[in-house]
Length: 431
Image (cartoon, rainbow, N blue to C red):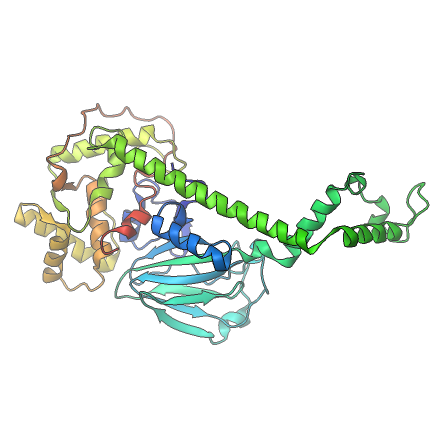
């Protein structure tokens, strides 16, 4: 299972959408949507190792992964409650960063551009302090609270990672308030677990009922207690404990997923007679894989397997009813190239590698944005949708025949069969 906190989010038109919960990230990317994997360090060892190595200097770092099609933008301008390092991995992305932070060092509920919190007009009307294009290997540091936006160039898809340092959780006020609360609550007399005098709700001069001391005296007493009891070592200890807790969680989630994935691969083996086969089949397609057009029987079999897997799914997607194989929905600028790919395969009548299919497309149409990621998404989405067959798997074990699932009378919960494959799509040989 994918660890809690690691989730695939799909954005289209700068808005979160659940429209691809069934058909997955490859279909989303083909139609101009962007895919984000939060806490990608839980599921990809390269990110796991990077975050671990950065602990020596940054104490705790987590990683989100962003894949965006050519000419698209995932989210509107916004500010974050954390410091981030943007690492461009593949393709290019244009960034704008404005030089005035609307809220200095914001907390989660103060992030402008998110959750309906508007960005002041004077910020966006000003000239950006940074306007640049990041290329593979470039790094951009984004301090907490600064408004920024990013959009993909027309030439190719983009993959970048953000290494986040959750500084909103480590502010002086949060660490100090936590340490103060811990100090007061640990007093053996339990004096400071009592409710504050009701007089505080009216006036500091109000006398405590039957006590003889003023509320102001009580406040002075608690401040004196904190001053005498709270030490620098207490703050250090609390901060270290907080960081260690985050790091242990990160190690536990990444190790558990690695073990689960290894067990999953071992159990599925050849794969095709496993209930998980519809989930795995598209992920096995790389640029070196050979694919061919599916026959009517193979397409029908793919639909039955997809619906069977959907009925058995325990995910939390928003899809309703049984999934259908409706073909590919492709963004306008790539439509001609995708049509040429299928026409070429039909005309050739034989299996081709995905890379060779891409070369055939570029010879037939002028489509610079038909890059390797788009090509890989076409192949994987078409295999998932029963339009293409992974020819290299033809000699492997065949899926067990199953009757078509009965019509479902109610809305079914279920994540997409390739629900966490955004990271896998990005991990392919050249992506």
